[in-house]
Length: 441
Image (cartoon, rainbow, N blue to C red):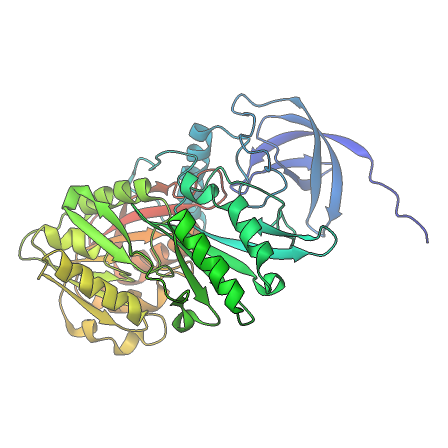
């Protein structure tokens, strides 16, 4: 069979870098995206894929490095797809993410904030309290791999630790590889979800076949020896159950600023970066300025992460969330913390927005914390509440920008402030926060 000729070595001046860690260059009149290259660098490359409007290339050598280039801390960087920015110092990462948010607002939403919020960042390694780890029994290696996917490949990276996971979770990867390898159904365990609260750790084993009595005993011994909660999931979230004859400890996190302790389940959504979550809450409440006697609507409220701190100010809060289990958890968290000023409602915010109960109610302010798809479906309902102020917390700059344009151009809100939140340092994931005020100039 004829071998395809290897692409030649080329040289490029990198003009800029993208949020996913690729350099951008123009080579022979065509845009080329170069893995792990930084703006201002001179590099040698080999094109790996040609497309109609751009090409992709592999970085061979950095001939003139950018001042912000650093040595990646993790030995798996470049193979594991979990991180894309470890070669860029943390200050430059933060600047890149801030620019990504502001440029998306301008380019997609056609809005510019009156002022930029300082980007939020805390520790840049060992911060991640949650992770969904892939599991694969590899026949050729005759062993189990557990970790994140390889970069732009479907394979599980061969790794023993993770620098972004909190150490309590990173230190479990190697023991998990050993314990899954001992199970009779090792080939039918596709993932393990790990979650760390302030004082406890939970592991959810996704299983596609029934465990034997010996398997159950292996997992029970592992839970006891490691001091962790072990759960099993055979299908959807409603199939979650603790491994037989165990009572896993509850997960929780403390918010010192508001004298709150919030409990949550091992599959509930919570922010992965606890320190940044606290900074985010502080900034959101500073922008929202809730006052005693005011009414605040918290959409996509989860377990009450925003609702309950707002209620601590004396404002009355209505939290709305699709997931009924998390709504119940929010109610329990309110009761456990002695908060009577927060109510919670289960509703599908993206499918049934026109029929939502809050449309006919008046609120002074609104918090939006939607998933990646954004909050487009509820914006008309939010505007109908006559709220004067909206704080929008986003996990996707593109949908934040789209929704910002809708709020400004269709509902008369002014984008007063916006900035990035570095919830996932070392990765291409960019979050943001924006403040909108009605009829402000």
